[in-house]
Image 1 (cartoon, rainbow, N blue to C red):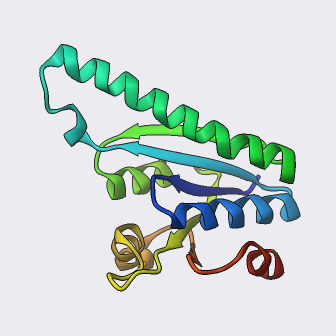
Image 2: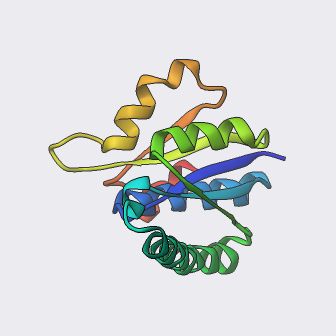
Length: 151
């Protein structure tokens, strides 16, 4: 079964990527996998403190995920799946795509500021020619209604 993978982070563009993936999954009978990556620099402390920080990061991610999951269930009848990985973000995205054969499409949101589309879009577009899945980039300035119109 087709699966859309979306990266959960604290960016504002993440919301449009979530919207697009949920709406598209609902229309096509696909599933949504939400990937959250905990960067390694968060745990460069003593082992005991690092373990506590890792657990706190996982708890924050789970709470953030549940907000999106509830919205997807109630509005789009989609039951998302959460995957949490630890490491460098781009490497973990690529590893998850490689590890999960059901992931067919990577959905990313593009930032709207003058710095560019955001680090994930910039870095992953460089390797898009060698990926086994297409990347859908959802502009950050699209409204909910505009996303609905194109889905």
